[in-house]
Image (tube, rainbow, N blue to C red; front, side):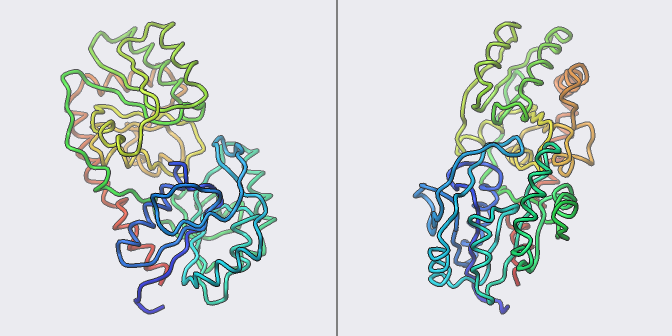
Length: 367
């Protein structure tokens, strides 16, 4: 394909209205491609946002839970509507987010002209055997359309392994992308160290384990620190009640934090902690925290976060081991030099995840 501007269509079964990981990937890469002069369209499930151009909301969606996440899946979409939209757009590339539903993305793939190159990005790892079984069912339903793909990307070694095991897909590993420039923030350094949790208040994200570790930390450490819990979710009231019952000191629940306010919050973190217990294919929030300037970024010891922090096992924590979790927090609170070293490593590592670096790799794969 000659080096001319491309017409690219990102295909996503889910809504584009939520700030979840796959949506962030689509918009981060899509925005960068637009800035490079390419024409980018978003063929997506039921979406209402008006702040982005070329959003084509093409399906009605229903909300479900899958892989311990909340998402929406499309109801069967008109094949005629899809064919008409593809004829109108005349795309060079269809970039499909995987796994995908046969009810929308599968029909888009099936209707794509032979001259349109189909690329995929595989995003997930299973949170349990049940979710793995569900993915196997999708493979059977999509076996015919999977043959249309020219090339498939996986966002991490864990995602690549799952894609191979369940879908029989051989993929190229290109990491998730973050706009480092957008996330960067001037340093916010306070006299009292701050611990920050940012994420959905659901079981898988592990805030309950952080609170248990803070209870242990309070019993064994008399130094000063502040804690910010940012996010919303069904466990919010239960978590706040636990903090109150156990007299956890200096813990503030701030609720939902917007994308615009996220860099400032993460820049205030001496320790940014993400104790997810599983179901992570990568770790976008880890990269965001590193880019924003959090001094120490700690992640749960799961396969997705290992792809980012695996070379530094001291930055991975077993969320279920309350004592060791508390000890790790105490170590970084007590040792400013260790925080400084962790921050220096983070700044040296984030470049490989910047959207400019990742985007150039994706363009080469498109070509």
